[in-house]
Length: 443
Image (cartoon, rainbow, N blue to C red):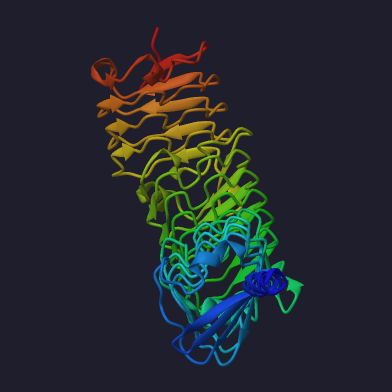
């Protein structure tokens, strides 16, 4: 009896071991029109005809195995990638979507922290919210054409629908070739927000006249971007559009631009030259913050420049210049400025750090000179303070050490004007300054 019993036990053990080996080698199942299997090497095979079901993170058929998924193979005529389909597949490294796919659902690849490489075919028309949120390792984005990429509807305006959103070192490829130059196709009217964000391979971008809006963060942190050609037609440059493009050297905005968004050129630390046309009516907060290398600012017309709605201290491109900046109308440097009649306020920081200015003539209409208005105008030698002046802000003439002549409209206004502190006085930093009234020095 012992021998048959021993034989039966051995047989049962072997059958159990075989079953477990098969279970370990491959798991899978069926869900609606989808059949899936996961082998022991981490390859998830999905066979699906038509639309994939939109899941929640806990209802994905392979949810219990998601951390084991290393790659995906698609079979059948699959049309969409369902919501949360690959959410949290933290070992997934590469995805090549078939050209039958037209949509990618919300959070489909969210938290795929090891995902480095993905191909988005030109068949894709819609990408849902948070589809690529926290895909921090994305290094290679493969598309079929710039036109098809720009035509996609990204449902999350904050950027998490875009594969390159979370990565700081993504490179863009078309048909296997790394893209360094982008010519936006004629006919495109808007460059979507975040669309080329973090694409470090880009060095040159050409924008045609059909484009009216450059979206927020559109080229943010394009570390290699050196040149941008913008044709007449663009009206709006949205916030953060070119922020932290540290190799960008020169920007010539066309005469159609109306507004420059907040932090549009924030931390463009290599930017030395910018042209701002008279068409610009508003510059957002911190638009030129940390533009330390700014050397030349070109404007069309002084009166229009003074009417710009400056929304914060860094609306002046020279605000953070550490090399000293020069102001031009066209190609002619302004050294002597006559402020137009009817101007009543010189906004804060308006002429800050323009080291080529030697003389400023203010009209009688001016009642207020804002904080740091002429701060750092190191070559400024002469300025007049009109008789209607009421207040002069902090630091208005700080670091104007070359100032030798102050012309006042009246002694009364000079004495009664409101000075925020000692740095508000034109003679604050000028040890060899002389005071004049009606052309005669006051002694």
